[in-house]
Image 1 (cartoon, rainbow, N blue to C red):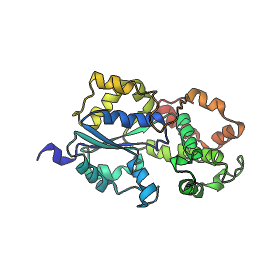
Image 2 (cartoon, rainbow, N blue to C red):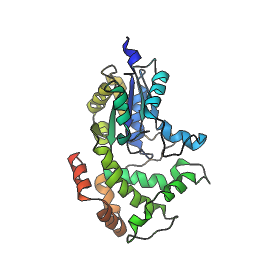
Image 3 (cartoon, one colour):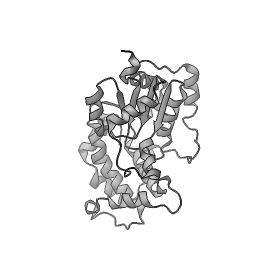
Image 4 (tube, rainbow, N blue to C red):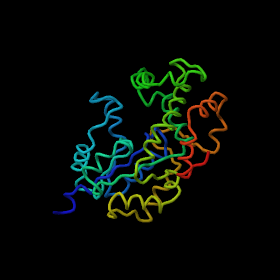
Length: 271
């Protein structure tokens, strides 16, 4: 049976969301530059906002969604989805397709990730003026009991409770993802190395897709380019913590465990 009948053109890139972080946007846009690649950017996070098919926290059943994008991208050497799913959700994919459908997990320095996580929520999550459903959902799932004793807040203090919830994600949800057996790739290393980018592409597409020097020069010229709909934001992780207030430092020490910090250190991140 021909190779194209085995769904090997499908791939997934997981992450703990991208929250308007330009470098996550860059990765998806860079992949789409190649004429043999077709990539969604958090497609299944956007559709519920407008069609109410599911809650924002839900995703389509993974094996069926794989077949869906397999059909959509049938004429491409690679069709993929970026950031719709989390690493811990990928076990059904491996059970159903084995190595035929590959995936990687993209990680970011925790300080930078936290910055964009909070910023996304304080900017109303790219919703229209007056629309509050997404942020209302966020407030309703906050583990308020966990944050008693820390700096107090009300629902309007999004920058406070989102910071706490982001720390909880760094300590729990993201560690759950990092404990999955897959390739965890630092976004910072992909941004700084065309070789790392091409290695990722080759792995995901079973060595079928190659970016030539001209394409690489084009996409790496966008690393600091502001895309349509973005604000110009640059975060230097080494400097991020220096801007924190006393209540933020206290929250970090209270909510992020030594075990979590050690895990990030193992992956090459310094605190």
